[in-house]
Length: 562
Image (tube, rainbow, N blue to C red; front, side, top):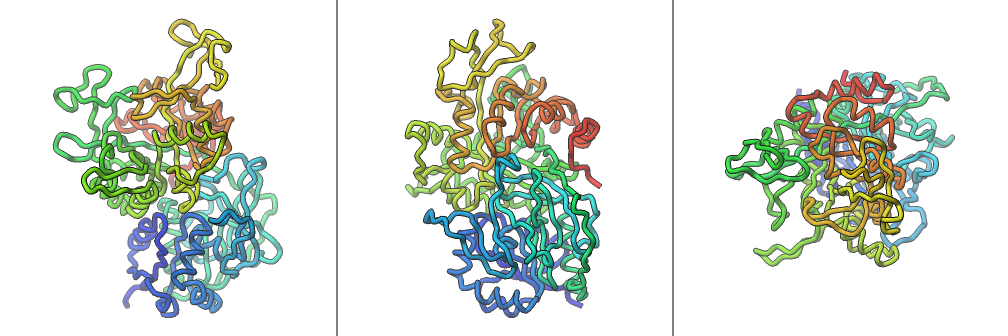
């Protein structure tokens, strides 16, 4: 008997490639819905909504999908919505309109209730990004291949509360910062998740497998209600992120490389290490990333450190890396390097930051990391007294794809001071602990931001930039430190604490990891939600599993592979 054919409702926003690959990985065929008439004929619809609620509903209306989709859902036919594919099922969302109106945005109205924003004062960091658990409210065939304690991946700023009118829809709930919300719904054959199964590793693949098998064998609608402990809670784990610094070698191939303190200059003979500046080529990016996925990395970041300086759109090798990686890797992928507006010197064409980012999302990226352009935008924001123009890379991308799609990478370096009074009052002055003081015993410093890969210093501090980019619409900060990079002595805790205490968006600690305890230490002593490393994993000095075991032994929640 021929396998079930899945109809994919791709409305053109975000990384749908990963959902497509997850379905293919389970052995099912796909067809794209390109016309409203196809909805009525579909055997099963998968709707991977990505980005902003207003953008999603606007596109669904424009393409004529809303009424046929409502009819399909009213008939209780097989449906799997993901993230916005779940949120749009509700009556409305308080996410802002493109025109700035504060009226509730209407949804499809299938599930009672309104989607609202997390309160930063209650839950802490927003967006809710990372791996969290599920409390089952129904026993459903979709969980036939999924273990009870396996975490799934979330990335969202808005959530659907449980109310009396939608209790019978709740398939699972999740808690974040004490706030309980709906993390999956099911009634009959209509299923939807707030989490991303296509980004939840083997657990997510097995969830999709269970859903599609239940559609095939006719058991999907046989979910049964369960008794739920009202005091049950889930826990957001701390993430271990692996970064791959990618560049072109002399043969034009993309390779993963690692220098020290942002020095990526090559020696006369590539690959020879002779002190600082020796560049170590450590393998091909897709193969290395696949290895890290298998070993339990929670996220993977491709950081293009030498390309993109002239032509971003034309960087086909990096697009191919993303496309190939998304076939084998089912955790979040971030890409960084040259995400900005620019003029193509060859064609004369002008490309916006949004167009550049869109290419990478469609190739398989879940987030884009913006570096130098963010510092320039922050300077302008501060200079203007905090005015939003809608023209920065951060604003353009977050408006369409949501704040969770925008990571800002900050590359600061220490500027040492003998006293607080010595520093400029516009900079956040940080006191340094014993053992981390300056070369002349300086007890204080400020963290000066740099651009162009650390080659140019700017008169603005990391804390100021962090606050500014949060206001502009960034959803996460990747916080590096030039002084610590490649030194393997641990993360810069004073920097991590200063920034993570100053913003309400998640912070990823970067630069300096050299052993397992460095991860546990930065999680214990600061408010960062994730920690990133590169060289120690590339050289197999430390295994990801050892890092996570150390975290677990230290009482820090981590995702341990089954």
